[in-house]
Image (cartoon, rainbow, N blue to C red; front, side, top):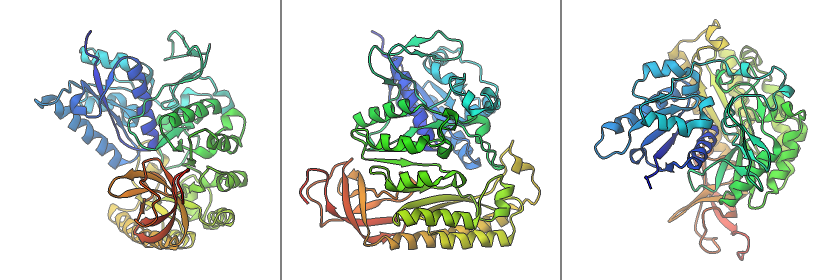
Amino acid sequence: MPTPRSVALVTLGCARNEVDSEELAGRLEDAGWRLVADAAEADVAVVNTCAFIEQAKKDSIDVLLEAADLRSDAGAATRAVVAVGCLAERYGDQLAASLPEADAVLGFDSYPELARHLEAVLLGRAPAPHVPRDRRTLLPISPVERTGAAGAQPGHGIVARPGESVWPEAGATPRRGPASGPRVIRRRLDGSPWAPLKIASGCDRRCAFCAIPSFRGAFVSRPAADILAEAAWLAERGVREILLVSENSTSYGKDLGDLRALEALLPRLAAVPGIARVRVSYLQPAEVRPGLVEVLTGTPGVVPYFDLSFQHASPRVLRRMRRFGGTQPFLALLEQIRDRCPEAGVRSNVIVGFPGETAEDLAELEAFLQQARLDVVGVFGYSDEEGTEAAGLDGKLDTAEIAERVAKVAALVEELSAQRTEDRIGEDVDVLVEEAGDEVTGRAAHQGPEVDGVTRLVPGGEPGRLAVGDLVRARVVTAEGPDLAARCITGPPGTPA
């Protein structure tokens, strides 16, 4: 019997890309490929690229070149390098022409048949790279008409139920679901106790600085049944926390005819056996309704965590960005959240140096940040993204001025975040253990995975040895920059206090 082909998936970018990679891993494993962790040990290295900002594009190119270098390494098994993901989808044949080191550049529509494409690459018959197109044109303008429409939706996974048809790709013969129960096409690529779970893809907003909708497409929600099935599948594999991801989670359900669909979904997800907590990311402030605030702050198992995309605070700058809000409505939303849950976690991102931003606009942003008391803020300097409205706006600032403004706001944010962390000293927090060696670390409810700092459990209160995946109650004793140190009050369920 021949040895199965081997493949390594290298993932860059956001948690949405991590979901896409695990779906691709599931498809490849189903097709008989052997998954390996190290690209040097794989016949094919598949690089899931990012195209969010210029630095992300550069990082993706660098990783592709590093993988290509393995082909000349005598100790490596690598025979081919394939680019997938956002950079490949956005630039397609342009990327292939400028990066001959990649043996193939495949867009999202290639995902359902990735195994066949990789086999062709190894046989010297790589498919032609796709020609980029605006993916928003693939679906009806009306959201409610999009259900069942054609077009690949990476990371949605195929959750097939008995007797239902599953279309691997446009024009292909449908196959049937399993004889009993749903089947999730996904394969975990790490043993983390948390996992991202995609609830929707694409975006209908037209923010002037953002190119993502053009290559991710129009907004499409996943059916609640599919999301719940995947959550149960993740729980069976040891996942304790699920992070709901999309380009815009507050729009979930609008194409399903229910603007309160997320509010209804969250308690159902929290009730999935094995899932200890549910976290939502990518919330648009202008779309956060009072009902959603109530569910996020008052549902057992749903963490009071608000990943709010403010981007700025000056109403004038926000209008030029094609966004809504400003200092006063943003502060009112934060007050509403904290009235219901004072310990709620809030993070955001801001863009500094947007075309036309004045010194007064910058001062308003700084004043807002001082009043907002956010846990974490990502500060980004504006740069042109081709194909966006902002790239053609007047009032551009030079790069030196943007860098100076970024440094100023970043220094303020660092100081404010440290103050907010210190405010939590004495607070009782629930910590999900993620590392349990000589040092035990995890995350409190207000800390999102990979971006918001960690909580170190200090000796003195442990009721026995803790394990990865345990959820323990602890009291914060010190602040360590963006991180916390806390002492256990109670241990995992079934452990004496």
